[in-house]
Length: 531
Image (cartoon, rainbow, N blue to C red; front, side, top):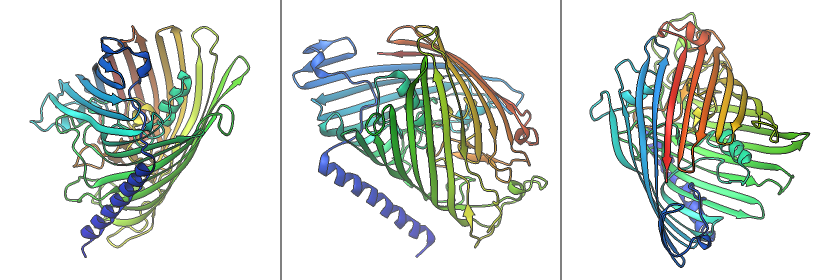
């Protein structure tokens, strides 16, 4: 049996097992995921047609809703180049939903997305939009696609099953009434490993099944899915990536169940990518089968005149990963030459951790919230071990799966959660009731300078791994980044935002002769309309 057929059978078995688990759970309890959009209790809405809080109709236990969102953004990118490029992009989503009580939900959402003024000198995200435009490649790209299309059924609003094209975001299955809790849950824990990369105009979706069960403060969340194309690939978005699949389970103990003001979690995610190496560009060199196990805790505690928040998260990773070795990855004095003559089937053995702490004075002017922390993901201090066609050994570089890294490791988006140490200091405050301000500082180092710098957010099109890597050039210092974002909520339908991010590149960039400049900057202004 050929290696390709062998791994195809492994993937088929992996897929069948995951779907069987979810199907069995569904048959037992008919649960699923909570709705991503805000839900309105049917009892609070009178029968007949309405125009608020959305456009819809209700008759008894039956309800139909129409929703509309539009986001338009100007961006300026200058990433390791001396050229500044301005681009304009946006997306419009229209959704229709039918619901019967809390038991049945049918949901469809279409999306138009477009990006314009993509010059040949475009860098950063602008360069990625241009590089992944197909029809034809050029200065603009746009398309209309179905972003979500799923059916959901269950016993009630806490226990149900969802099947179809849907948004999946790990660690985001619980929503609290407290806004600060939701920020910590969804913006500091959620989407670390599975996310949609929603800041881009082609936010990734997932085709699969998800199950949610809740009882006595314990929430179980199961899922099995294939990621779609999208993110930076606009005109071919939302097509299944059939040889990439993942599945997992999350167990969350809601705050107050075991310990007052504290939530606990544990998770497992299995991931397989067995695309043909002839169809995918480097650094994809063969089959990837990794299994990630982790635990987390989140707490917010009254202390003095304010509240102390603490986040702890840890993960270990095992499995197998085919990779190839270039001499420059380990030895910065050697020019980047040919890769080793063949891929090595390595044992994946990696780890990652997060520790963040914050303190907010919620009863004083502007409600200042100061936070600090460290995020680290292991790298491989000996990437040359076992180099060669028949080589073996361990690969210690943490694999980031399918995350939304933009929220965590700097808005300039120059690093992934692999071979990384990120020291973070963040200040959030609200000088006016509808005005929010965020300031952040990152110090980035490589976990080891014998491994590469990694960047990306996971598979988003069929020709690439979704991650890139560049040599360390013998330096651990990736650089320092400052981020500044201000947002203003005009009313319940209209929001404004603007921001700036600048990465002052360290030795990893300044010693790289392929970069015209070691710095990266990103500026944006954005208008969001929803109804």
